[in-house]
Length: 387
Image (cartoon, rainbow, N blue to C red):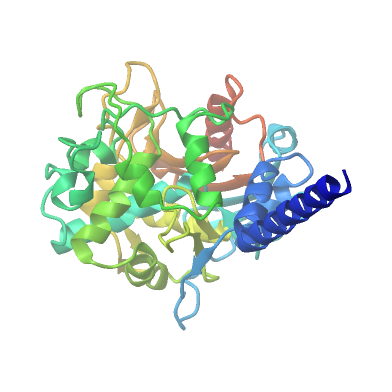
């Protein structure tokens, strides 16, 4: 009996040591997984959204040595009375409003400040679209109708076989993908765990093998499509997205603070939602698109691409929100009205007829509730009409 107990004790000690060694070896992955599990918790979400670099691997970009492009202060305006209630209801952390290129509102809430580098979530998609348009004009990419497999051979045999760049840009790739953030087993949450555990986003994309429709026939918002656009850009140029973004957009735009991308375990930028910057710098994207691709008197994004990417090109359902090349449009969009949007209440709204740009960051845990998205656009329109 004593001998049996001795062997049992040694076995337990071995298992304990093995578990400790495994925990030490995988401590970063385990820490990230635990952080992801509490990323959106009520008592952590605001802090987390301003400090993603403390949770995930990241790649910081340079902003250059020039002074920031000017955002002069205009005469402060009184926003509609309903704005205060909306800010509280939607857990808004930052609101920057530009009228004719001048700041008329620049407010921060819930303990955050103007220097916070805030997570973009899917607003990052519109930044990647701007980069794509520049590279298309430069000739690095031949045509929107080229197959994605021509630039990313690793996608051959996947659900992306036969899809064109255009199909992927406007989310009509046809792949089957569950984007339900509230379903633990959904594809989008499986992708999040790949990121948290230091896996490869490229491998996750090439592993997509289920198709729901032929490419180009129907629309479904599929975030992994944006990663494929990033793969196309890297395949066409042989360069990383942060390197290109820095050269083609960040430095020319004159951002206030150096932004950063969250990356996967291979150092590949999380282009579909991992860009982090100040709210005023998000507003600069809106201002550049309001001005047809120019900022501070400098042409940065081709005028033709601004028009094409913010026009409704996706085969969305009649009467529903419309979609372009990684930009959204309201169902009843006025000419020159479009927006970038990210989960939990991130927006860059552009209303060209009114000369208005609205950049919003939030930690809105109720962002998926029925009617919330429409209420947000209605609020932006109310602000624009009041200026």
